[in-house]
Length: 263
Image 1 (cartoon, rainbow, N blue to C red):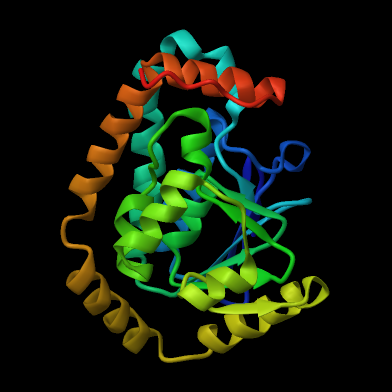
Image 2 (cartoon, helix red, strand yellow; image 1 turned 180 degrees about the vertical axis):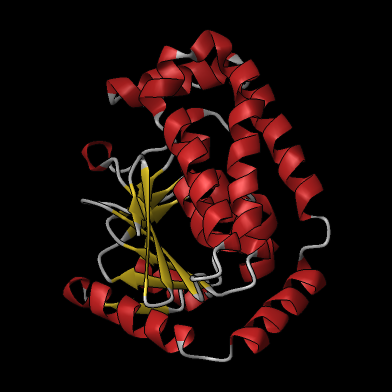
């Protein structure tokens, strides 16, 4: 069973595979892809045939963040558009967290911006050794969304999370494994096989026990996540209405260093 679109969905032998499928732009998230992600995540969470869920990206990257070209095209409307798109992104994030089954992110190439946030929402992360990661929001004058400001401090501590979010530096897979964001790092040629092995192991495991374990962990950590996701969306919308965001988007697309003025 396979369906197409910006995020392909397929189930085989108890494993639901969600594949971001805009390889020409490194699976950057435009409006259609965000909506497709939401639909696929909600479908996977409810699919009785799926005992485990895997997220991956087609082509050279997992997800290289939001589609900054779309931001540029829609700049006058971005402050109004962000809440609508954030709602779809947040529903997808919550579906992954609430799904009564393990969710694996299998990442490679580039994992940036909202792609980083989606990865953080997964239960386990496998990464190719040459993957490059960045919470790139500050580079375009925006605050993080998709739960990044909720998940990351809980995973790695406040100061280290703030360093990643404020500086938006590129980080490698070994660094993220060391600080606890990535579970396993494998050679790029081994990623697909390692992901399949882990997914098959989980699909053959005690599904009820997994569901109860995940529900307990989420109850302990994430009771206020929906409210926090909404706060993130409102903050991003306020950023999108400012001059620094417009400058950041223009500089990104022009491949130059942005000149932020703090507005």
